[in-house]
View: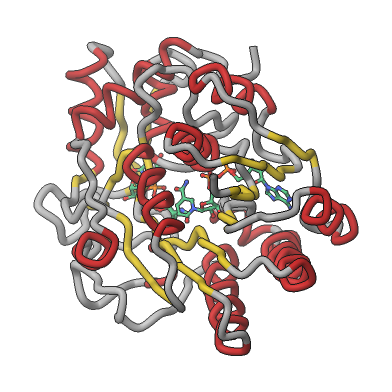
Amino acid sequence: MQKVLVTGGAGYIGSHTSLVLLEKGYEVVILDNLCNSSEESIRRVEKLTGKKITFYNVDLMDKEATLEVLNKEPNIDSVIHFAALKAVGESVQKPLIYYNNNISGTINLLECMQETGVNNIVFSSSATVYGDAKEIPVPETAPLGATNPYGQTKLMMETILTDCAKANEKMNVTLLRYFNPVGAHESGEIGEDPEYPNNLLPFVQQVAAGIRPKVFIFGDDYDTPDGTGVRDYIHVMDLAEAHEAAIAKMNGVKVYNVGTGTGYSVKEMIESFRQISGSEISAEITARREGDVAMLTPKAELIKDELGCEAKRGLTEMITDAWHWQSQNPKGFRE
Ligand code: NAD
Ligand code: WQD
């Protein structure tokens, strides 16, 4: 049985990935400081799978405590590194907190892995590393460039990981560049739980549930079919399965886009949510959000060709599962 250390495993994508790993027979150890999550997500994953998770409430900024976890948990085969701060707007306001947490946390983790001989790591990167991409759909080989401190941290972490692999031929690094993860596990027991949503779908979910009065559409004058921004939304369970595929087949440094290859506009997302949830969902057009691009969708074939991994769930499942989670857990894990 392979043993995987999941940093940030109590969070949105980490909890769904932990569930997939347990179902596939892996042993899961989670390290998370719960700064943006709740231990309840771990309990629910245990309940859904009927399996145990070893959980350490540890901050990656605390190198000694991180090393203690790796020493206590011998024979870790791979690390999946989700733990990071991820709010773009906040990163512009508080850049040092982002650089410190995301970069120092990653360096501490890599040092601890080196000291304990763990050589495989899958990293949560993001479409944000393409900045304002010129070529759409964007291939993995496109020029990189970030437009905010959060994106800079992702770019820097990609570089740090790649340099570490160059220096150590035993090391395998897979960088997964996620597009827009949405949805929830079909049980409705785990899902995304933001108190103040920054991303479109969690905001729409909360409007549909009556928690917020309306959704603001950030601009309808983009050069897109209906004037609103187009993104590639991927079901979080498809994304979780991509992580399992990645750790099952590590080989040097690999970089993959993780998306569906199909883009939807903001208006299309809201309309689908209205139809599936039966909620009215008031929407108002406002000014563009600074730093937003008109369209960002990936070339999504490489991960299919090399890892045999393809998104299976479409927009209806994404929204049905998001709504199931939201309507079943109006206060998320905070109840
Ligand atoms: P999340 O906030 O739900 O999960 C991140 C987890 O990391 C949280 O549980 C948090 O408590 C933990 N964490 C943060 N800093 C830590 C530290 N110093 N030590 C220990 N734990 C720490 O976010 P998510 O949406 O699940 O995202 C997971 C990863 O995927 C992040 O790296 C994020 O940047 C990346 N990503 C997310 C998206 C998205 O839209 N959700 C898109 C692209 C990439
Ligand atoms: C999607 C579309 C908005 C909210 C972000 C990060 C990226 C990655 C994924 C982590 C855009 C519009 C949004 C709202 C709106 N995260 N919108 N009203 O901006 O594609 O990507 O999350 O790595 O780094 O930048 O996602 O969900 O914020 O926006 O009209 O209240 O919805 O303008 O067109 P984005 P998003």
